[in-house]
Length: 464
Image 1 (tube, rainbow, N blue to C red):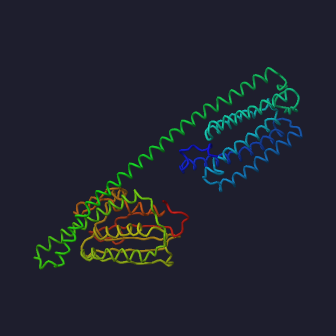
Image 2: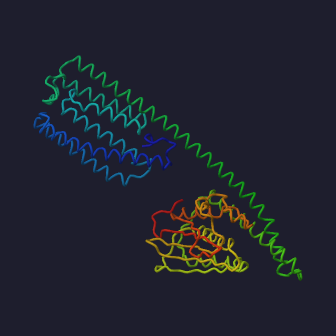
Image 3: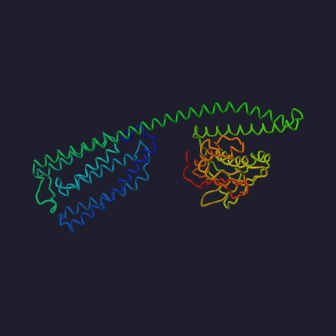
């Protein structure tokens, strides 16, 4: 089995998916062949004045029914074949299909006139298809065997060892007993088969080599990306340490542990504290993006949405209180079904949305989080009456490092990575997220924004 699969494709899902699609295409094509064979028999008898003997007609029908039966078997079997190189895999199915088809075709050719049958050209068609899928050594071996079988069959017919099944109506004379024609026919047929295999397999081999180079390039890019993310995480983490230290000293001063603070000085210190907190949040955004790209860890667990959202609100409440923004959670779900996902990642996603709604709001603003059940999914809507997002900027809002123009004018610091992280997390949970502005909470001068997350409650496998 190992020789059927290129070594570079052992863990390439796209390669296996392509083979599965080609197998399905062969199966569908074979149904068409069965219909065409039945139509050919009916038309031949009824309109084309082609006469089959009772033996020919019976055996052609048996071969046609056999093709239909083993095609049904392949149609059923392909659902259970796994991408396992050490056992029966999709490439094995391709090989088995090709062998059975060539056997069926050989029998059809024999019972429709042998060397006089027009169906012999289908050998070339099968060899070209096989050459595009199977390794060269396998296809050349199959081609050699069937050329030998076909030559033996024609030779035995010529010598009278095998009965020649002439089809009346196709030719008025016999060709199988003409030695010069038989010799020229077999030479031309063999040459056509091997040239077709050589050309088709050469094209396939070039495509395989290019795909291998592409896979190698992707691996190198991924390695470079991991090294870059590790470097970014190291540098950013070092930057975070002194800023966190500054924030701690500011807290000591603002909490009057070092004595009374002048009112004007306290105002400046509060601004410095706000800027420091924003800086730490930006650093956390960069670290979260780097972690998402660097680590493939994804912990699946049952999550109670209400507890998750309430935990986010509790952490964001001090920041909201400082800006006089109220946060309200409305749970309209009839069924309190638990989500299945990564608690840490979903916490980051919802916390980012709530944090943005508070950050880009005005004093006295409102943030509303609403949960609903919608057709087997849970919808989490985070709406506010803040500064909103320009309509032409909505399609770009989830791009890395993109910040809305009104957010920049508001002198509110940000990395432009928060929403990008949110989108990646939600898609990793097989969910979706959309942004709207103005929101349903819009006021006259404050259009607000609304982000709606939809997560499936039941799914077979989460994206990893």
